[in-house]
Amino acid sequence: MLAATSKERTLGTVEHTAGGAILMDGKLVRDELIVQLAEQVAADGSPEVTLATVLVGDDKPSRVYVGSKRKKAVEAGLQSRHVELGADATQAEVQAAVAELAADDSVHGILVQLPLPDGLDAEAVLNLIPPEKDVDGLTERSMGRLVRGKPGHVPCTPLGVMRLLERYEIPTSGKKAVVIGRSTLVGLPQVLLLGRKGADATVTLAHSRTADLVSVCREADILVAAVGMARLITPDHVKPGAAVLDVGISRTEAGIVGDVDFDTVQEVAGAITPMPGGTGPMTIACLMQNTYAAYKMLNG
Ligand code: NAD
Image (cartoon, rainbow, N blue to C red):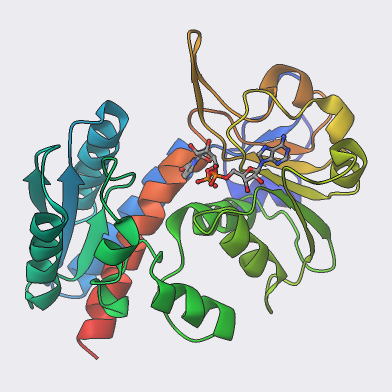
């Protein structure tokens, strides 16, 4: 048998797809990060660190997401507090609930599950969260800190993409990255994270008005798709050997489908995330890391 390559030795077990691409396994890395965090919390004397989740209305996927966030918080050695309001909650009621958590010293992180029901102004609600407790990193002040390179919380989904690249030792420095999608939730912060000092990629932002998406994507050593269009990315979009990270989620009759046509793209890519089981679990792991960072920020 051949000796393990240095990559295999440093990465531990790495699974490959049938086509030979590295499978960037978000569930596995999430579990590793949660275990590491639980160990760190214990080593720090098990302080009481609380993540508060706020769910408004009865959107089913939102309920599932909040449920897994609460479960993983407990696994990471954190406390979970949950506030739930009905679909008929008024703007004032939602704001009062968030303001109470913002003022409560025993709460370190606040997560308001989005989207809020129609008619509610999410921006006004998010802006009540102090930057230290903004573990989702979505408020104006957190985004401003990211742009200015100041310490603060970074949005969990693009941060999870960075953690996967680190974990699987995908080089970013000097590489070409293409991010598809320009939302403040994913695409824009992803561009900043890939391009900032330390990651040092050269980043192109593609979106719905990009001309010739195929050629733009084919330039990428790292391709991040955050669109929400089932199987938009085919092998034609992918430079052989590129790392392909799928953020998009489309709910189809066949179940959850990503932006990337996994079965065909894994034949061409050098590394690829599954969907589900790729970027989604990483979002939750990063939320837990941000919550512990929030505790540290609030306690000097
Ligand atoms: P969004 O709708 O705000 O943004 C989608 C972006 O895609 C837009 O910027 C748009 O310009 C671009 N776009 C639309 N059509 C396009 C096309 N044909 N070609 C190129 N670009 C196109 O969505 P979002 O909030 O950024 O989320 C994107 C996707 O990621 C959604 O499917 C969402 O459900 C999913 N998501 C996943 C996670 C996760 O943890 N995996 C977290 C958040 C969001």
